[in-house]
Amino acid sequence: MEFVDLTTGLVLVCSFLLSLLCLRTWAGHHGRPDKFPPSPPGLPFLGNLLSLTREPHLQLTAWRRQYGDVFSLRMGPQDVVVVNGCAAIKEALVMKGAHFSDRPALFLTEAASASKGIIMRKYGDDWKSFRRFGLSSLRHFGVGKKTLEPSIQQECRRLNQSFKDLDGEPFDASRFLQIATGNVISAIGLGRRFEPDDHDYQEQLKRTDVAFKLFLQAQILNFYPTLRYVPGVRGLLNKWREVYFASKQWFLKIIDDHKETFDPSEIRDITDMCLLELQQSKGSKTFLKEENTWHIVGDFLAAGTETSATTLSWALLYLALNPAWQRKVQEELDTVVGSDEIPPYSRREELPYTEATILESQRIRTTVPLSVPHCTSSPTSLQGYDIPAHTQVWVNLWSVHMDPAYWSHPDTFDPSRFLDDNGRVKVPEAFMPFSTGRRICLGEQLAKMELFLFLTSLLQQFTFKLPEGAPEPDLSGDIGITLLPKPFKLQAISRKSSM
Image (cartoon, rainbow, N blue to C red):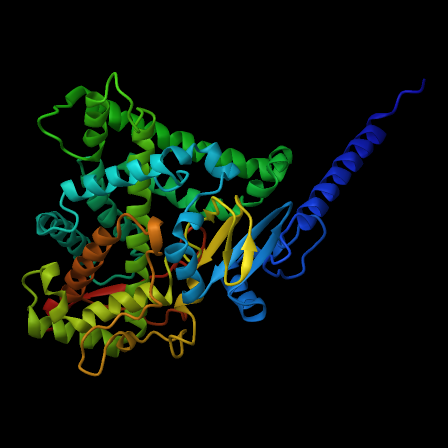
């Protein structure tokens, strides 16, 4: 019997695997319901994967114009259903939330054990317990109440001082904003704040940035996990695991410090809330296990830091590009509250220009354009199409906020679109920066308060402008989980010296 040489053997193995892939892809197509959503043409074996590597939110919105509010994609061997537009998203997430509120088991999130937290946890009774725990913990530490405002206002003053120290020199505001918003959620989640020169915290912020970008860059692994053995893709996975492990060690050290000083009669933060739940449930069944603690706190910190800081970055950039509107907001603040004290959140109705600016900043550059992936938990229908159980679903929030049926000239920054004829704030139904339905963002109330307090305090003290001779900023953004502004520099000119 002749031995097959190595090259021939590899060719045979590859041919065999390719045949299996063809069969699986064919079976997937032929296993679809008769009334499955239509899909754009794709490449053999890859389907539509390569069409979504750069600006997926724009490509999906373009396909919506061709295939309608509900269409499907072939992502390698898997089907994904994409839901676009206000009506279809509300039908899925609100009217049929029991069917569309699950999370898919993605290779990347499973590699990071993300389903042990709240955001990526599978839908069901267990998730409901985690969500109740998260909401009650946030309320316990003042979210949605006046008691939280002083600590946010203190971070506002520190941020103002950081900007003032720059003395009008051009700078990148993104890391300053991350530290400021991060300290708000860190105080709630970890019972502490971090100084701008804290090396370990700076490294953790960098890891969060990398993870948010890698989730898109390495997305092919969610559909073809076997590619983790291919050198180029393996590097992405190794980086993902490196970020995950380093973040875990950072959180576990803080949690260990909490354990040493834990006092059940003096609960300091959400970490302590987890430790209290674990202590009280010893010997009895509980939804919470010790390994969940760092995932829960990590979910709060990552989401609470990145999203609010990103919205504020976009707001400052658009205000610098629209100086006339920036002056209107400042004149409103000067007239209604002055410049000495940051207005309380309860006075936002007296500041419609300010509030409209925040809303328009959230609309024109949706912070999480494709939300977090959903999954059907049972067979269902949507807009007349049949969708099987365990189908991954992408919710295209960008398509809602850029829909000309609701927003005239959607690419134009125009906060007045949120004002009625009497100058009061109006919020159309096609506005959902925090998504909607059963898995609407846990931190919505905290984010709203932060955005208001930070933006008002900054505009009371500074006028923001682009440096003289700076190139026109690229407003397309860098997409990962969040849509970040491309790097840009601002000048924060003190208003005190110019008054």
